[in-house]
Image (tube, rainbow, N blue to C red; front, side, top):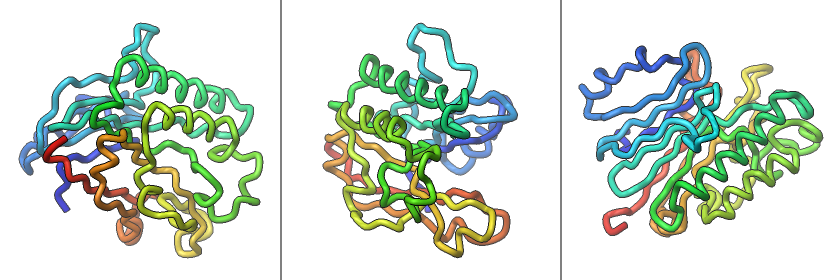
Amino acid sequence: MQPDVLCMQETKLADSAFPAMAFQAIGYDGVHYGEGRWNGVAILSRVGIDDVTAGFSDGAGEDAEARLLWATCGAVRIGTVYVPNGREVGHDMYHYKLRFLERMRKRIETAEDPSKAMLLCGDFNIAPDDRDVYDPAMYVNETHVTPPERQALRDIEDLGFVDVFRQHFEAGGLFSWWDYRAGNFHKGKGMRIDLMLASMPLAERSTSILIDRNARKGKAPSDHAPVVADFAIESV
């Protein structure tokens, strides 16, 4: 598989350690925003990278954690995001998560243009609705599913975005993340928290999307599976 654009999250690299030259050798330009040991996001592109913005760049002082990166790749404005996990309801990190989501919404509202072709994708650490968890009763009062988190996601979508996966699939039980513990992947105990939000002009050109479960198999895989989408964007 050789996607035109590849978005990464949780790279856990400093910018100086990002293997940009190795990616160039296989045809990809790359930009990375990282802090070293934790977090980190990147965008690789075979169709060009312009107008790169690291973080919020909203004049309010940059966030200490490298979780958000923007670039224009060909005809599409791309955002890759690694939303904070939240840890547990009421924890400082839970409130940080909600602040992060609201700040990202404001960034899009004031500095981006969802009336054009735009894609915001990554690990949102939010299951949009109960179809996106294997057993809703197991997640009552847990992070990833609380009303404030889900509302924060809807507030972003209300700027003019479509959950591309739900554009193609209505069924539940289709997940992108499975906990390593207790063999949850093989038991089907997962969540769909890795999302692609497309602006309407781009969503209209969505032709397919899939969660590559095969990439979650094998030796020492990620606990996430890649989400892969195709768009017919020649005339965007």
